[in-house]
Length: 181
Ligand code: ADP
Image 1 (cartoon, rainbow, N blue to C red):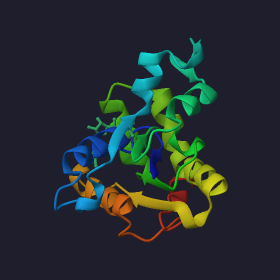
Image 2 (spheres, rainbow, N blue to C red):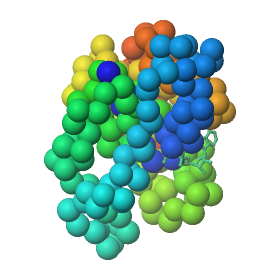
Image 3 (spheres, rainbow, N blue to C red):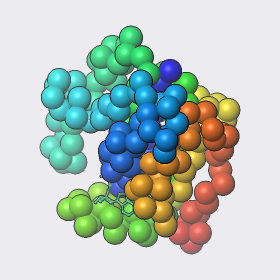
């Protein structure tokens, strides 16, 4: 069983999955989650050098999706966290969401440039990652989680329910289009 945790940068994937890791196998997350490991795929990309080039303009590395897919192959019972996680095979895909304005604020506070924060806020308003996730995996495998007014711990509880199978799939309930007008 592989669970992807994806979403626009700043939606809180790293933070929420760190909280989730400490819950796995406890009453908070159901004992059925005990065997799961959290993989932070962006860390793997850095540590294993699984990128094709460095984009100097954007100050980012271009992921080698084939190499990452190969690295993930055969790893069972994993929770794969990254804004790229939905590009790979997965049994369930959790898509974290955050309203664009607080998302932009979170990214600026994290030290991202204004251009990058604005670009990600717009992408979130347009549901880009949700649409990609639904297109690749189908509505029956996607679990949208709004993090806007939730603590990382509350988001981790939602994620635990996705992992244990206690939550129904959902997509399209979160709507940020008003942000663009
Ligand atoms: P991602 O991994 O999706 O890029 P992070 O986990 O790095 O996002 O979180 C981005 C920023 O937002 C961090 O500064 C973090 O402290 C903050 N943050 C994360 N989750 C929440 C939340 N649920 N509510 C408010 N701020 C959050």
